[in-house]
Length: 408
Image 1: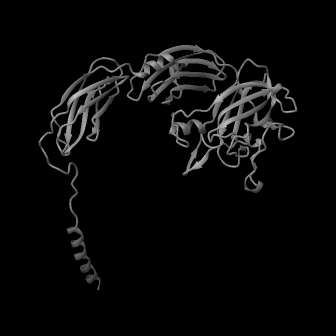
Image 2: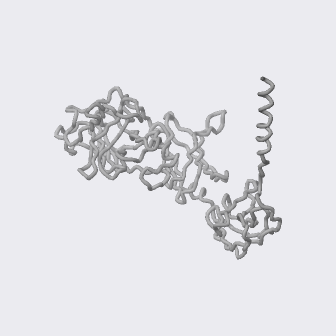
Image 3: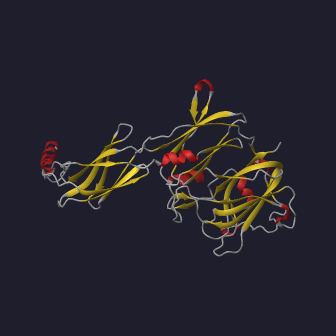
């Protein structure tokens, strides 16, 4: 009986094996005749790159056009463009010297035409404009690095510090395509030290080095265990918290210092509005007089299609922050000083509502650091006033805050 079962299996195996065919890997056609070359090549030199336009050959089995050229690093670069278009962008140039590019038309059998040689002279790489705009400024407990990247190219700004026998030690790099860069490096002592900064692109072209000496200003995180709501709990002129789920989800102001930065209902959440009803504001006490330097605000992220999404709904887009040492109990602003007017901007520049890049999410998840005016006396109370949220109305959703300053 056991032998019979084995014999029955054999025909099945034979049938299965006879049904297997070798898969052909590579071109599915076999046309060994090279296509004609591209013709009438037009050149537009751009910063760090060149746009080529050409006429395609008439072959029916044309697959793509490729450009082959050398980068300054010595690496050969190949850029391809399908037969559906007659344009090709060659990039990666770090200088304005003349470069030679060979263009090939390639058919579906991966047979290339004779090359057409084109000479180009790209304009100055955008990293040099970024470099000329660089500023390294002393800041509270650190330094602030500013730059303009008007072409919105992908760049890396690499700051370093002189660290004794270790030599130059790099801080975390700033990788961005934003047109305006302002990043803080925190956690530094208030001693003078040397800083060096370079700018490079994704092809490892890089600028000269900016050298400077900076001395950070003293700053400390003000202890959250001293923060408290105002008495009465709703300050005159402020909005009450929104209590969803029939009042079971507490979204009061005190939620802004419970240590949670993403989970609902751990956020200050004023009643949602669909039409303008006037700016929403909330007020709280930091618990001590201090020379306030900045506040980090974590916006509450909605979960959209399984992803945490900032720059959305009640996240503040245009807002003000006010400070006071002794606020008038009637809630008026006559005893307050404006510490700043702020606008939240996506680093990516994406304009679609809810459209975010990986950089947008990373920056938002870390919290936004908003600097205060320094030409004001010591203060104790803060009022956050939302003029417009990302939804286009005026309610706000803040999940956590951290205030910094010098209480001495």
